[in-house]
Length: 285
Image (cartoon, rainbow, N blue to C red; front, side, top):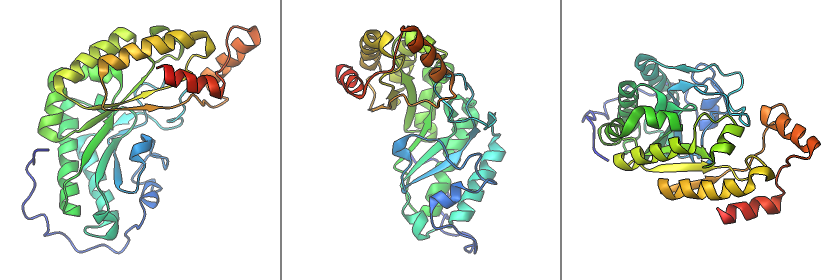
């Protein structure tokens, strides 16, 4: 990663405040800093060596029928000034060169689709986060990652994605693909089609931006089993992601997905996959 204007006098910092936290979980419980204590993020970023910040609250889409991760959290993009204040306040709680700070290695910037923030704001936010991490830990972050939906990848385009990678230091986009089947994507109101996914994949490749994609085995139930396998495999092959995470469908009983599936089961038109069928589908994909 290229160094982006880090102050060479970063060790000249203020004395340590007295209200430091010793655990990141305690930090995320502070409602003056974070919109939700769960700090919804990819499983691989919920680690004691990953510090999470919040550029966006909630999710800009909030229509996926299976997801209630941001229920009750209003969607809002922070201004750059608000985000800078947030980052500064987080580091004030952590302190500099404390045991907690010294153990940090990576950065995740939330919320649900931070890649959808305006390019200039996102670029400056990533850059500032990078510099402050260096300043307070004495180390370079091994990785900076964000969530990015298909529509946000399309909105950014190859040129902006490349700039985010080269100029600010963004290293990885977590992309919720879920399925490569247009029918399955419509079934869960994902807001995109296979054609959108393939076009977004082209932008990702042009920008040489690494991705970690999420696939949901069992999505759409037994009714869409075969096309979920074949069409998802096609999309994975086109994206060529650095990482793939398979996340099973476990929606809340109050979700639109669960209610629709319940009705289809009563009608004999569909059903959820058994554990064995779920494993088989993963293997086939």
